[in-house]
Length: 243
Image 1 (cartoon, one colour):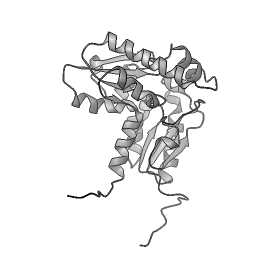
Image 2 (tube, one colour; image 1 turned 90 degrees about the vertical axis):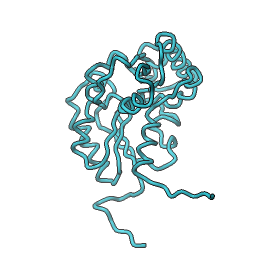
Image 3 (spheres, one colour; image 1 turned 120 degrees about the vertical axis):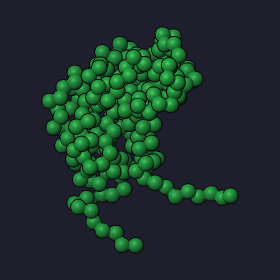
């Protein structure tokens, strides 16, 4: 087989490109920003100068930085682009029109799919990094117009989450954080009638998805369920088995 150079690429085989904001937290296995989370190679690209605070504030002045980082991923040959903060939904519509590959910046995009696989009268719980920031503007940017079915609980006032993630203390205690996520899940479950699914919006939360599922017996979606799904669409596998 003969292979040919593609443009000015200097590496190959990374199908999923992941935009990383500057949030200085220990990213453990299962986190979007930890390469060992994936069973396939991914390519990371830092968005220089863009922090979680820009996104929580819906600061669109950082748009060009997001676009610049995305173009670098395209130049290096990725087949799809995602991010590591659900609030990147701010730029979803514009970025997908600029890139010639699939763009799925926010975990919130999954809400469209989730809505279609659960009963029409049921609700979807969302656990987010900042409930105050998860407003109609963000949902609108993600094309979501059924907010009456979304029940939101934030982690911004949970002591360890605030300290380790929002305030960037430089350390993360997984036991403490899991306890806070489980506590939030219980609160969500107690306050929500007829909840048929949960979405973990924040890219740091997939490691705690199993603990969430043990509290409520409903499907739990997160950033990794979305990334794995898109990867399976852009990179197809041969099937091996027997009959």
